[in-house]
Length: 160
Image (cartoon, rainbow, N blue to C red; front, side, top):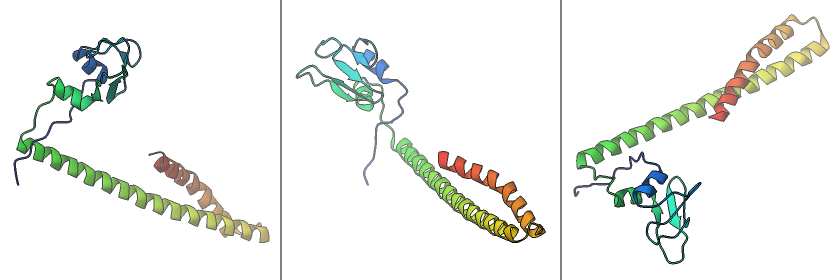
């Protein structure tokens, strides 16, 4: 296997700063004068991409390419590349474990939710037959004590 090097993806400069470094003059929200064709307000940009809309100019690209062209990125050593790759793989493994734990917790909560709803239905049916059924009242107390917290946790899991 040959020696691998890659460009680091660590960029902290916003697109506006990179365009200014490239010689563009910023003109309002997400617009700039073109450093290549000198067109006024012909460059539009977002966080990661830019493009001059002047006919035939061709000044366009993304943040990484522009930073590389400006000499703001450096090559990683094989050791740095390997360390970065291992860190990314470990982060992906951890993210996968978190997602799986979240799914398992959600499944457990949904099963308990169904169980509580079933207990409530049974208790209500028993109370229709006899308002004096202490076990049914105890079951309803359990349901109404647990159900709000369970539903809150399910809602939090849905918002993640």
